[in-house]
Image 1: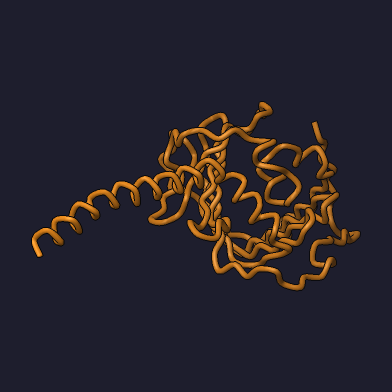
Image 2 (image 1 turned 30 degrees about the vertical axis):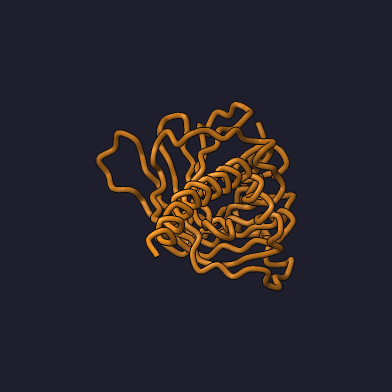
Length: 226
């Protein structure tokens, strides 16, 4: 009996390192391919809709972070709608070619072509038009902009230098790699976080949801793409 227990104990001591090594190898494989997994999962989603909370932080400021929230909708390819309910109503919508920013209080709409605006940016990824590996380089977390108990967080630096963006961070679900949060830090140290909540995926969304009608009573502002 003692001989049997000794053999079992010896076998267990040999097995544990093998299990741990196996888990470590699997973890490393996931880490190495994490961008591909995030990209692949996002590309597989045809549409989604849910609630978002945006928090804006200003560096060296004594004022509290500003929060805004509303409803976000997305339809592949390139269509997105952000309807802000609070603190003020605003609408940001694109049909994949043109972007409209409508301010009901000021009764004006800013119109901009999407092509150059989204090229190689976080917006390009969100619209399903960009590729994380092509547009960004992954590095170690340099600053904790996102906090999560169980999510996977990656930090990405744009390969093309931009005047406004220093880096982004993405938090995804640890099992299905669905996007949960995004953080964007500018060159001055200010940053915004956007949390996606209560998401519903692969809904039937009409194309007209991502169009905007400019009426005669609106002031129109044509934004450049420089």
